[in-house]
Length: 58
Image 1 (cartoon, one colour):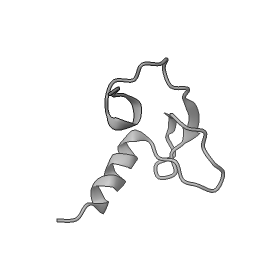
Image 2 (image 1 turned 45 degrees about the vertical axis):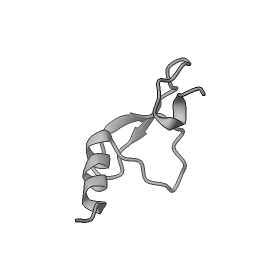
Image 3 (image 1 turned 120 degrees about the horizontal axis):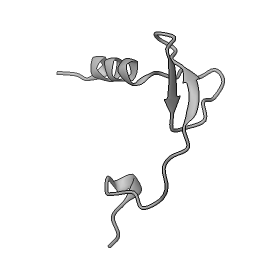
């Protein structure tokens, strides 16, 4: 059985293509591993972690 990519194992292909974006919360320039879609928020690493942490329950 092969492990990799989406199941948490090592990736065996080149580096991801990064796209420049502006964080929807703090306005900082950032890069994301997906092409941003108009009308959908994009967050820098710090804001993403803050939002992710605030959604977790007890």
